[in-house]
Image (cartoon, rainbow, N blue to C red; front, side):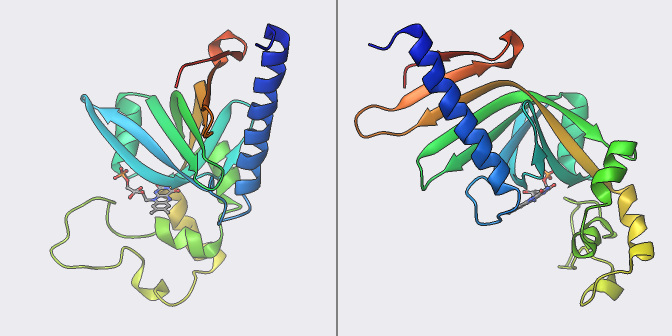
Length: 200
Ligand SMILES: Cc1cc2nc3c(=O)[nH]c(=O)nc-3n(C[C@H](O)[C@H](O)[C@H](O)COP(=O)(O)O)c2cc1C
């Protein structure tokens, strides 16, 4: 049995290692943490979808989205959200509960937008609200940019639909799979990142 101090050091080491992996995933689309599952609630109805991790720091995660998509209304009606990462190669799951904030049309969104590639900017220039019913398939991209990227000045219209979602972590749960007993622990960001093991 490890003493409390050694336990804390061990859990801090695992947490640091996972944050290093999350950071690595930002520049590596093949990394298992590059995308994650993001869930919201609206009128007691849960929804989950895949999104791409764009940035993070000690207690915040960021992804980009279209302000017209239904997840944004979900966040406005209830900012309680969950994010799930799973690295199947290493057998590690990160489950996050937090609150989400929508950065739209503000200084922060503008800064993130300035680093969005022209190819990605096209995705925010589509004529249809994401999720709207279509009577026939039509790509939700401006017709003239189907086979090319917009010029930087033309791409600015996409900024109206662009937003950066910020998830503020409240709890983070790590599950590390092992044949001889899984390791599972909770980090409580409301209590100065207090950590404790939990049963698997
Ligand atoms: C691999 C992958 C990555 C995705 N990344 C994003 C993303 O970063 N942001 C986003 O809004 N939607 C992303 N999507 C699309 C969402 O999963 C979802 O279909 C869309 O955002 C509409 O969700 P909503 O109707 O629940 O708002 C991604 C989908 C896949 C399959």
